[in-house]
Length: 115
Image 1 (cartoon, rainbow, N blue to C red):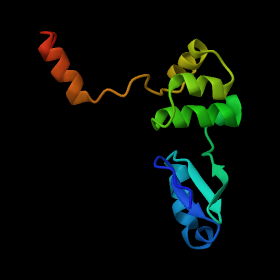
Image 2 (image 1 turned 90 degrees about the vertical axis):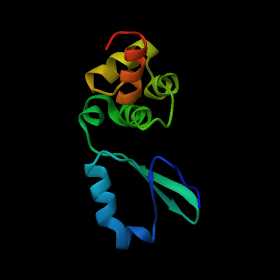
Image 3 (image 1 turned 90 degrees about the horizontal axis):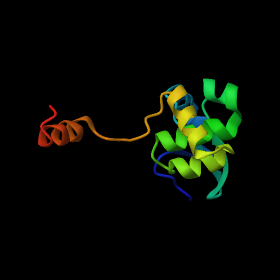
Image 4 (image 1 turned 135 degrees about the vertical axis):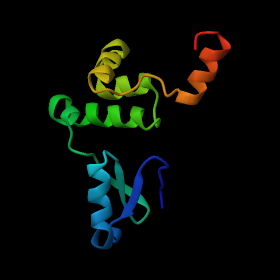
């Protein structure tokens, strides 16, 4: 079966027994991949403000970049916009442009004497 590390994976059979997991994942903003006989069938995209305002491609691009699955450049292409416009969209939806862990940032600032 095809698996994706950033998405919860479900088979068609799983949907009967694991529907609650699918719903809880969507409520937490997680994408889910549903497959049939090992082949991807559909991606469950959580209902969000970005889905309402920008459509499925934009919501999917934002979520995939948030999860670290794709780069900002690829996400911008998926959303059908320039990288600059996509960065603005990320800011409006509070998607961090860099995934810098707080501890590493503190360490860097201390090293530069900026703590």
